[in-house]
Amino acid sequence: MRLLVLLLLLIGGYANAHQFTPTYPKLELSHMPGIMKADMVLFNDRKEIRYYEVNVFDKEWNPVRFATQSKIIPINYKERKYLTIYLSGKGIKRAKYICSKSKILMTVTKPSIVSSRICSKIK
Amino acid sequence: MKKLLLIPILAATANVAGASIPINGFIESKCVIQSDTPGMFGNPTVDKLSTKAADGGVMPIIRYDIVTASKYKAVITTPTDFSTAPNLSDSVEWTSTTVAGQMSDSEMSVFNSDKAIYNNGHTTEFDLVKAGSVWFNVTSEAEYGYGKAFPSGSYTALIVAECIAK
Image (spheres, rainbow over the protein chains, first blue to last red):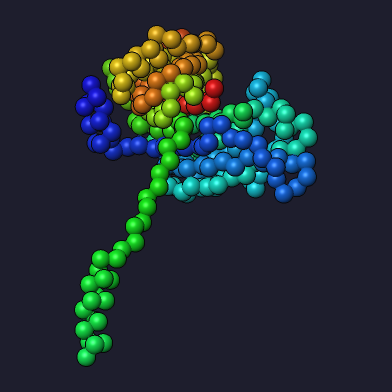
């Protein structure tokens, strides 16, 4: 069984991956008073995806206000982007999940039938 | 003369001396989602679109790589609507299944026995309690009206594959 899986890994021609780390980001003090930040890394290994959206949610999955360079992140294939998420006020206590989701252009119909979303948890 | 003698000695020393260059690596807990096989609808009957191989479709396969066990859960939501389609005047009934197929560790079969299904069977949640790679097979079927023919055109529907830290 393991050999079969290994073979599939080696010969699998079509593979597209989305990575978003760390799993458990820590909020740290930013250079601005009252503002906390979390550093995240997004890696795009999906050929047909050029944009990802970043969002922050509380434990009930309600959106939390945050600031970053851009909510929609343009990213090339095989590119790694370092993002800083800024939170202030009540958002610091409420924020529980930081998520990145692939955005599929309407013009792309093949092969993209899968939208991926990875959520990290603030501990 | 003495200087000339020094040259080969220095050259030999230069060959011996070398800088050791470290290669550092760090494995961190993470979940990687891979769209392994893109799905394709088959059209076995005029009123049906299906990703099943028996219906002429291609079953979408989504691979999850889990570096550390019990850190994430996988949530896979199958389509309940088309993202692109010709104008449809009647209702579409969707049915779907999501199962863990290939797995790098046989103990990952627990993913199937402990999965939770909700949202009228369209969302399946797997607790990723084992590390390794797992391939989730998704089938999706759409039936139009009561035996009504789907209008000709291009149809696209989206599966949402999520990995959520616990």
